[in-house]
Amino acid sequence: MTAAAECGDLVTACLSLISQHTMKSDETSSEIGQRLWSRDVSLWVGEADEQAAIANRLGWLDAPVWFRSQINGLVSWGDEVRAAGFDRAVVLGMGGSSLAAEVLARIFGQGPGGLALTVLDNTHPDAVRAVLESGHLNSTLFLVASKSGTTLEANVFLATFFEALRQKIGADAGKHFVVITDAETPLARRAADEGFRHCFINPGDIGGRYSALTFFGMVPAALLGLDLSSLCDGAETALADAHLFEAGEDNSALNLGLFLGHWAGRGRDKLSVLLSPALTPLSVWIEQLIAESTGKRGVGIVPVADARVPLDAYGTDRLFVAVGLASDADLTQRCQAIKAAGHPVHYHSLTSTESLVGEFFRWEFATAVAGSLLGINPFDEPDVPVSKNTTTALLQGQLETDTTPWVTLIDEAGIRVDGRRAGSADTGALGLVTERFSDRSTTG
Image 1 (cartoon, rainbow, N blue to C red):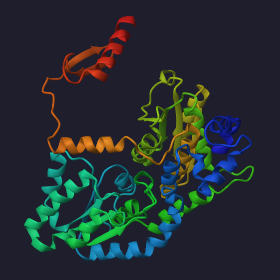
Image 2 (cartoon, helix red, strand yellow; image 1 turned 120 degrees about the vertical axis):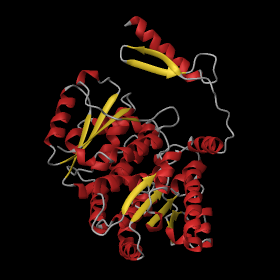
Image 3 (cartoon, rainbow, N blue to C red; image 1 turned 135 degrees about the vertical axis):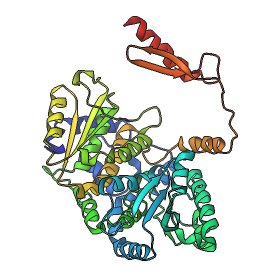
Image 4 (cartoon, rainbow, N blue to C red; image 1 turned 90 degrees about the vertical axis):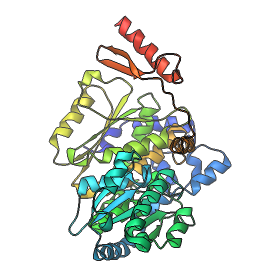
């Protein structure tokens, strides 16, 4: 079951949708893909300065080729790390800078001779304390991941663990730290000034959430002891497939993008991602890529953690994408049942988990295509600065906190809403939710 088999009239409908934004009326779906490969920034709406910024965010299109060129150096570096006595690695980062590492660690685990690797992307004191009190600081390598080099959480982590190691081993503390960042960032300068073990300079034309096939994903893979050449094979296969434009050929990345953009543009904007059990950790990476890339200008696709609910419980705002291992008959049957119930389903089969890395590229390509159809820029993040500023203020104690106690406002018909009573500082959105749930509970 392939994406091509599911397309039908979908391409024609997509062409109608995209023509409202960026496409010539006589353009074919193949030409959409070809324009993307030619880096035609007019595929996406935006003013001249916005499109200029997009032009500097398309380096991910070459990431599989770039990845191949880095393998020998990464393998040698990983051997040096192990020879230095490190047996554990902790990735310190947030969002796109750390999610690929988490996916690889959870799906593949520790390879032969590899380091045990965990990701710290939570500033809760208990999470930080667990690393500090692990008893393994002397043999732990900390990988600080931040494209901008200014990510607050990553720098707070760095300061915390650097000081802990400085107190234990003195001037050699820097040898326990590795940095992944762009050129000439504050983090890169600190790595040089304080004698960090290594500083990996990532390509500057690749945004954080599109960086899985760069140092942000592949340095952790090297530390895990994974077969980088085999991983790259999967990425190169996805790259080649995304160049298929002849009739009858299955360009699954392009077709996935057309599928997402078409249905989201028609109100089916809640995306359930169905995965074979062995691939489940991939969902967190897909969720961040889709939500942050498309959620802007009042539109977007909302990834939904999918539970096995009765088919008649799904609304008409739902669409489904499945990525399954070829051996997973249960997932195939579930997709058939969902389709029979009248919901759109896109299914893609992988021969093995080794093909997983190709999914990074396929979803990135598809997200770029979907963004074009939806009339948004999938490479910016207009709300991220607001979130970062709020986080900074919270961590510095600059925001007032409401001490009004939380109580249960509604607990009926299987619905529970906790919050503050009306009149507290937090009544806006919660008040609206409470009102709507109250209406539902009284009307049945």
